[in-house]
Length: 371
Image 1 (cartoon, rainbow, N blue to C red):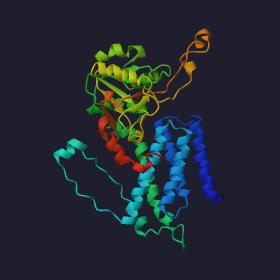
Image 2: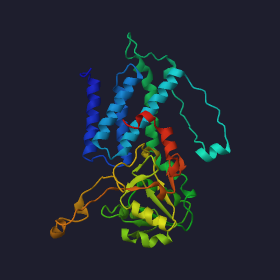
Image 3: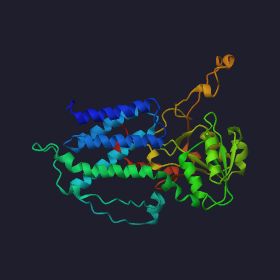
Image 4: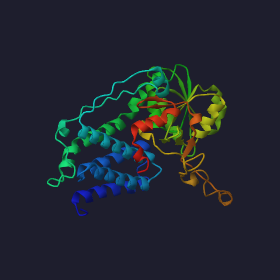
């Protein structure tokens, strides 16, 4: 019922997050994903449904509302898709019982085509689903939701735990990717890259060159943080990237979103950096959590995401004569093509751009590509 207090409370929570996303009070992929997950957890806990289709449609409607509020924060839609995937998995497990684990057969052909099999460490579920599920029960319409909700909340908690530990899981193999006396180039401020470089510093001595990334100048904060951790760090202007690239052993970048074709949206300057790296055959490594995988393509522009910031940061209005004669843009993100990237380091291992499509198949359901 529209007057149900629980439903009204859920709508209020959803609208509050949609408003904050629209006003850019919630920014960043991980923060947006965490806020979305908290809202979905409240929606599921308060929802009344008598079959799984009603629950799925409810979650999809919430996802559409949040994505429409801020379509450029791709992690919002990704989190909704991940929760929908878990809901369907838990429903199938509850209705079909514990499915027998299929025998894993190893072969050279399968290894070459699919890579190393991922180890799924499923947490043991509670016995809440030992009670038979009854959909559309006329005698007790809430019995289905009452039986299924405990395992759904556990599944959502698993996604939450994954987001909470994403930096540690990406950084744990940092020493295998960075070697002693290497010169690493990075761009701007990325929490994932920062954690990755600091973890490697416990085992290796190396040098980091940080481009300051005008006009946001996030590189200055990044350089200060790395230097305070005892890492040899140099801060350089963006115009020096190409000149220094011949001395660089590896480029490590963060990502805002990883697209279905293996390309990515990343902070402005990433395309310039990746293009310079290709000219010198320098590998470009991307550190990003798997929650940034999105089953979408770059439909906006060949080089960017059409997400712009304040142009006065590039050219101030005090330059009156010049401002009247030019169009000034300040894009937040570049689109970096997959052929410019060597590998993605995620919290589930390392993957080349060509295998992103397989990860998407494992992570989301095809019917959720469009919410």
